[in-house]
Image (cartoon, rainbow, N blue to C red):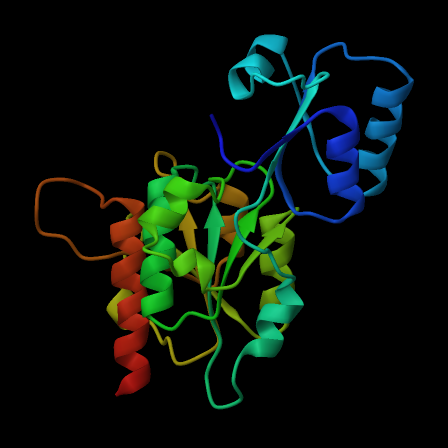
Amino acid sequence: MAENLIFGIRPVAEAIEARQQIEKLYIRKGAEGPLMQELKDLIARHRLRYQEVPVEKLNRLTKGNHQGVVAQTALIEYVELEDILERVPEDETPLLVAFDGVTDVRNFGAIARSAECAGAHGLITPLKNSAPVNSEAIRSSAGALSVIPVTRVGSIRMTLAQLQQAGFQLVAATEKSRKLLYDADFTKPTVLVMGAEDTGISPAVLKLCNEQLAIPMIGHIESLNVSAAAAIMLFEVVRQRIE
């Protein structure tokens, strides 16, 4: 059973009204009635997303009387992007890591661990099509996800465009580039963009990036695991910034 579950119409409504951070929200397909409609209206007012699922999924999540709704609360406290930027010390150059389709919780946690060790100031992850920050992700991060700030955004592309306008360079990790990461300048405010495990960075986001960098490899396998690639990129940033 998933951790941090709240079930039942009124308990879930109370959690939303108390502004608890909701990681996942499931409602039974075809669920109707006045109380359920009030809950859906509340969800809409708080701009939350929910997924309609068969009742069997809800029954697998909990043996309790779920009344057609189950919520999973977040295990960490998400922050706003502005909060992350405001926390960057004046004598440090901002470094952020953005996720574009990374869905494996172990990869997400491993990247968070490397990012924290490399002194990154925060992580940016989309609300949809992203690994949940669950107990497995936190374990994989060796606790880093409890330390490094994480923000969730509706559109990763729009958020990156805003950061670009604010003076950040967007750096994509992609094995398809002819330019190597060692030829880039990481002394500027930087967002490292890491893509999906199977398809990489989406074309729209890749087109937006200022730099597309490859990690040189001499073996026979064509690409690295995304968490390994992120670690190499992050510590090239560290190398350049401590020289």
